[in-house]
Amino acid sequence: MPRLTRRAFGGLLAAPLIARAAHAQWTPSRPMRLIAPYPPGGGVDTTSRLLAVPMGAFLGQPIVVENRAGAGGSIGAAELARSAPDGQTIMIDAMAHTVNPWLIRNLPFDYATAFTPVSQVVVLPQLLVIAPQIPARTLAEFVAYVKARPGQLSYGSSGNATAAHLAAALFAQRAGLDIQHVPYRGGTPALQDLMGGAIAFVFGTVSSSLQLAREGRIRALAVSTASRIASMPDVPTVAEQGFPGYELNEWNGLYAPAGLPAPVTQRLFEASTAALADPTVRQRLDALGAYPVGSSPDVFARYVAEQRAAMGVLVREARIEAG
Image (cartoon, rainbow, N blue to C red; front, side, top):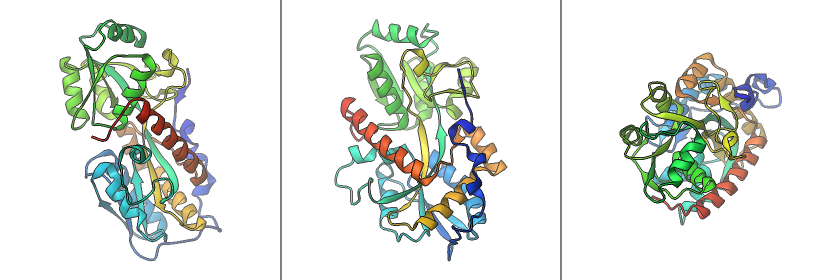
């Protein structure tokens, strides 16, 4: 099977758009704001702080990360939505950007029209890991194990409507599993209960799950990406184990307010791809189990629209509600 590589995730380093093209010479007039709509220390906050310094160096102004947490990221998103479309305020958001429209009522903005997508910056693959007490060694064996115990088992996640929950809900739906969801306050407590056998499986990030799997404290059966990942090349994808088309990953994207002029959008895109090419940034992303993408604004806009539609179907069919 093909391996997941950075080239497969968008041809980051092949993009000549990193160069300071003559048609995109916008520069910020003062220090910029980069909104991270989640608390400090989380995945989006980490990505934001990794990219802020090299992006600022590229653009010639410092970029200050501003945490605006709450309501599943929608408070920070609302702050961006009411900002001027001048390139001075930007935001990095998680895949919740495409889920929140289906879960949160009475938002003061429309996720579909309030933002200018700039680039998908990183993808964070997830591992389907099971409790070590379960004898299954393949995904097929695990599905059979769960089906033999209808309604008796549960799966965990890092929280309601998170990427981990959505990936597990989609898998349970596709596999026809009668299994209950237990939301935790983060991925670490979910993995702790998984090691103890209190829950049957979790979709965990590579950074949190990989070492535990290598130590045998949990068992990795599949990855959530379309292709296998370089850090665990012997672990098959969910798709290749009887669930064609399955793919659901966490990802982070860069946004600006709606109405941003095209040259400014292009310049921000160039700054973000330049930051992703920085050796220090790439080393840190490797440690997080993240893959740089660097997709163009047009490609990212189409991806966001497709993901928003797909998440709407999943939320409705899996009966997911806001936590």
